[in-house]
Image (cartoon, rainbow, N blue to C red; front, side, top):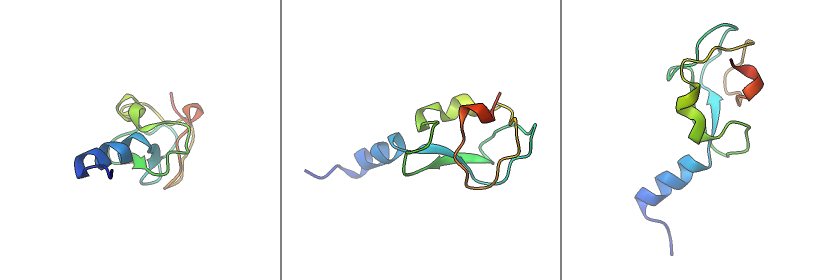
Length: 74
């Protein structure tokens, strides 16, 4: 059985990881404007942690389209 459209959205979200959607400078805060979720979910920070990252500060300059790691933020 194929998943329904609504189920597929959840499946896609659940297997995503957090990535940058624009460059982030050292000391800049993470926000909806500079991070988002992307498949495949092979990065360190899973989609379920996205909201926890909002408002955290970058410990280094992070390039666009880079998967975030816990060591990158405070």
